[in-house]
Image (cartoon, rainbow, N blue to C red; front, side, top):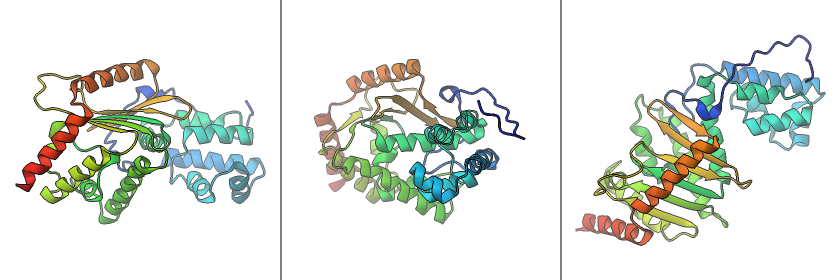
Length: 303
């Protein structure tokens, strides 16, 4: 590994698949929990800037030759956006750094990894070829309408500012676009019935959300299944999760809760969640029965 004069870097062992953070609420594209400070990401950005300069590149030249937007490169160097691991490793190879940036990103302090995991998950969700989601509390974020998403975000304690709220809602709308692409991913959603029946945002907002779900049932490559309330037991009592398959056929899982979130890449853990998801699909209503349930709920509200 190349030695850079005057540098001393300490690495702390960590594994993304085993770490858990605090208040890892996932908003939309680029949404992340507020960090106490951005010291670690500024450190990574500062290292990137130093390596760029050591290689004889201006920001403009590196952005052009590496194939990245100047705005993204500037955000990474200033620590305003977390540097994704895959980009760090590609920059290491391009700049011939001996792997410095990749090691820095892998061993970020846990408090700073939380935002990075959310960013990585949302990036992978946008490029996934297969999405398998199970949700128990609210409609999955990728399927939320504008007003429903706003109601969810307004429920947060402590509250978001109006500016942040508008940003998160806009970002969540962008997530919905993946199901309306020319070649959408194969997407399977299992939603526990109480989440379908909870009138989040009031009756009008809730019914608008249900109508949108009903429309989604007719999209190509899209399957929606309701897990009925009358099941005496089911495989999802430990909470919701999302499984992704990337274009390279890598498999990832994502979970989140009150006290943190996880981006999981460990094959054994993913296999366990995959088996659980298969069981949940067998315990849920089939797609036609789910359509009928949505029609029933909507019909009840029209009376």
